[in-house]
Image 1 (tube, rainbow, N blue to C red):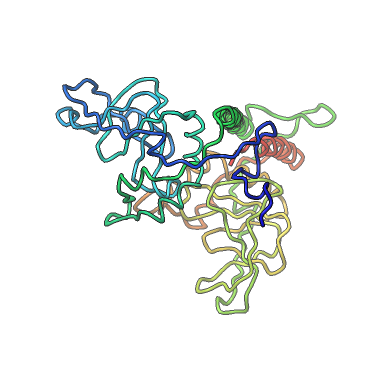
Image 2 (tube, one colour):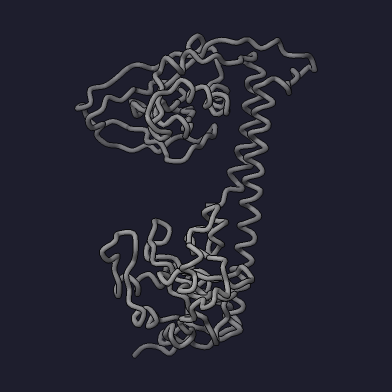
Length: 391
């Protein structure tokens, strides 16, 4: 026989002052489907339900009204605090998003959406319930993507049978307040993260334009900077391997642009398949020559033995340059603009350059001591930015 504690329907993590069982109720028991149409054009502002931004005005999302005024009388009226289900699926909303109208005003939405008005439940708690993936299993079991692969299909009478776990109203409020507080903290960190990134961009601009200079340790000025082609101070690693050779260690680039002195791409073990890869035999900087707008730059400080990189990258090594300095220079907006001007390709995602274009770029070069100070400055900013990153 199960112990009484094991039989209680409670979450594993909860506030200690609450001990009562949670109830399980159908959505139809705590919410009413909204069927009120916009007769007489009471409202003309059309809302949309975005998986990323929630319920917002079409004008904010599309920069103009999508719906025609003459069709708005058949739209549903969405009042403040109403919930809306959007059947359009995406990677971030695999069964479609459900969001709460927090605009503080009423508007209208297409009848393609399902609108419902909750009662007898704390709406913030319900909002966060729909932000988790708990309800997705019900949707997947009772519906499908239908004839259109971008829309989820589920009948209304089935949708409103969705089970909702419900604690006491006081616990609902406590959960809602905690998650709201966490959201506020995340927002603050995201703002700080964006501010720090802009700060770093501004610092890089001032450093590489020589508007701001470092002093030597004794207070004296460093020598004037020189300008040389990257190919004059860096060497392209051109060694290749047989694509059918034994498995090698392969550096796989991440999809997002990133750079850090201590960061390197993921190392995986596997066959190099059908494309020739360049061998990384020494510390180097990898600069992508395909899709140059993304600026994937990697500073490989301690490469693995026999490591190889994708042919998408141009590996550069140097005996006279601080490679971290080269990598930071390759992350400047000026560097990217130059690559784009010299690139070929039919679209931004296909923009590419030859290795010669990279090697012929003129780079401002301070002495090694000042290079190191610039690297230390930008690296310290990178570490601060990384701590603020919210994923």
